[in-house]
Length: 214
Image 1: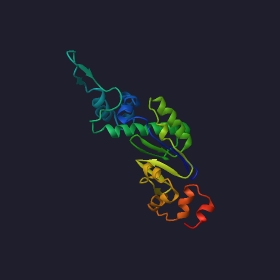
Image 2: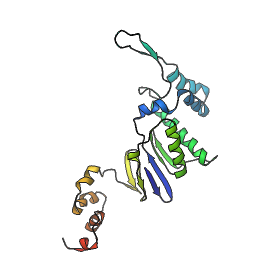
Image 3: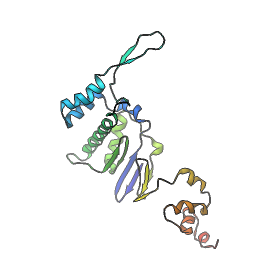
Image 4: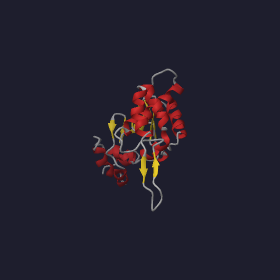
C-alpha cells in the first residue's frame, strides 16, 4: 500500500504468502548467524542460530517401507521454536536497514514500522529499494493489497487508519451494503459524521440532490 502523508510516502507492504513459507527463501541460516554475531557475539550466534537451526537434525519418517531421512533447516526457522518470530523480525529489520543504507549512506533510518512480516515504510526511495531487494530474496509481494492513497491512510498490524482516525471497523461487507446514499448514515455515525449532506456527497450526489428536502 503506497500512501502520501504530509509529504511522506508511506508504503504498507503485504507479503503474498504466509511467513512460514516465505522464511524458507528469506535469509539462509549462515547469513542469519553472521547477522546475529555482528549485533551480539559469536557465542550468541552459535547458541541462537547455528545450534538451533543448522546443527539440530530431525528424523523424517519414510513413507511405506523406505528408509528414514535426516533433515535440518538451511533457511527459515521451525514454527515450534520460541525464538522463531523474534529472529525472523530481526532479519527483516536488517533488510530495511540495508535498503536505507543504499539511499542514505551513514544515516540512521527511522521512518518505518515493522511487526514480523508487516511493514510500513515512510520514504518512497527506501521503499522502492526494499521492494527490489525483497523480491530478489524470493519473496512475493501481494499486489492486490497494494493500495495507493493521497489522503493520509495506511494499513499496519491489521489496522487501517486515515490520518489519526482508526477506520478498521468499516468492513467491505458494510460498504457493499450501502447501495443508497441514505444507507451510508450508519457507517458515518461510527466516526461521528452525522451529516446527511456528507452521506449524499460520498455517493456522488450533486448539490441539487442534497439540497432537496427528503
